[in-house]
Amino acid sequence: MKLTQTVFEALDRFRIEIPSWGFANTGTRFGKFIQPAAATTTEEKFSDAGQVQALTGVCPTVALHVLWDLPNGLADVPEVEKLAAHYGVRPGSINPNLFQDQIYKYGSFANPDESIRREAARHAELCVEIAKRLNSRDISFWFTDGSNYPGTANIRERKHLFTEALKRVHRELAADQRMLVEYKPFEPAFYHTDIADWGMALLLARQAGPQAKVLVDTGHHYASQNIEQIVAWLLDENMLGGFHFNDRRYADDDLTLGSIDPYQVFRIFHEIRFYEWDAGKQADIAYMIDQSHNLKGKIEAMLQTVGMAQELFAKAALIDYKRLVRAQKNADLVAAESCLQDAFATDVRPAVWEWRESKGLPRNPLEAFRGSGYLERITEERAARNAAGISSYA
Ligand code: PSV
Ligand code: MN
Image (cartoon, rainbow, N blue to C red; front, side, top):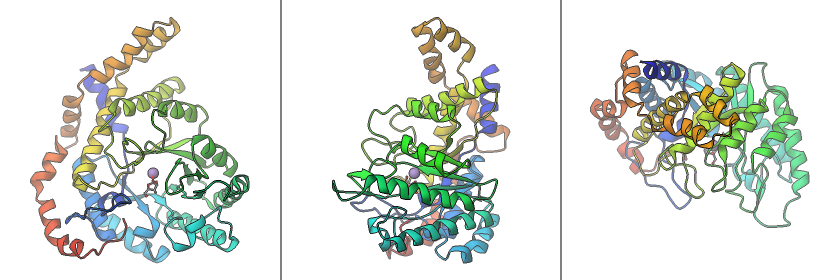
């Protein structure tokens, strides 16, 4: 009974945002495998996101990438509002695109050409405005800026350019908006990336202003990096804004959450729960998924991800913090470690199923999706367009 209640309380407060680009044809830089059912328009992305929300009940918002979902900028806002109302999912974080236009070959905010820096600033301001109109709180900034060869970039000067540019964007934010600064140590710049790690993102966010926080994309770390320690530090500094969840093996970031290392995701949730237990309040964190599946069915992979996130969040909620703190104080390593291991080993699935039933949701969203006929319908509707390649990058 206690277990069920704890899981229910955890799931009642857990929401996770899905990315519009997760429903479109995307791939690796070596190519992509076209899926006949992939979304080819913003409307189709909303429709698919609406399915995930209808089946899980915990994905009320969809992250939008401005260039891909609102290619005409503010002019697309009314249409997006209409789609949101029709498909039952609200616009979530707004993602500027400061990397795909030809002008960004040598960077955006740190481009050596001032006119391109101005263009990048204009796009960033447009994104803030779009977010205001759509009632989106978070604008998530990810940059490809960096260099590929030693000596080709003035790293310190670029740091200053970033500081100034982010400060300028911060001034445009409404009082309730946030700017999230994402980091990534590689790709498409392979020698140096201007915002390569959490420390750089933290410094820049601090300088940008009080509404700037760090975004942790779980895939954007070197192998064996201790991500949960970064999470703990950012929480302690009140600088953790949100996550882009995915799993990864070597360098890419588009594998299904928890498919390779569920214990790592659990450890991240543990650090969050531990912080909340100490602080006596909930952390203000945007949980978002950032995955575009090249091989798996896109809606199925998203349902799988959401289910995995719920299970791991529920498991972390089972950790007995009183016992853990006591064991840590006594340097009882085995007892402390087993607090985590016991929670992780607990099968929370029956409680998760029960929670879904209590909300009038299908016990097994994936099975319900497979039986719904939705995939067959969209495959028929979209196959010809996908075969003809009429689909934006995402
Ligand atoms: C880059 O790898 C990234 O993680 C950024 O968040 C982008 O917005 C997203 O993936 C889609 O390319
Ligand atoms: Mn990301």
